[in-house]
Length: 126
Image (cartoon, rainbow, N blue to C red; front, side, top):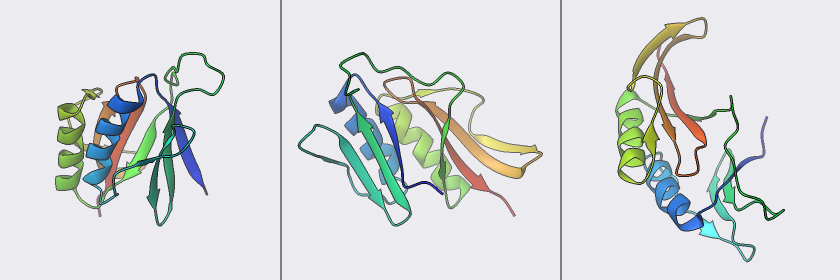
């Protein structure tokens, strides 16, 4: 459905450190910075990117927005969360764990990146 997701940042270096760490736990190679100072992470299913806003204004997190990353198992969710906290992220919501609701049983963890963007690692349980 999506070709890419891009979030804004006010600090490219802090964002690269954070996203290299959390996406590395998912098997994604470190991001590369293009000539326009945007960070790109490539996967077989799409692209995740981080940029300073092109209009020169400060980046801000989407109020009510969350970007979710599909994760293979609960242990990887925990590694993703730990890598984020160790690299400038902030835990939010409840601690990593099982949630059971209308979408079925899931193992989730939530973080805010150094710019305040809300992220989720999600493993759908059978």
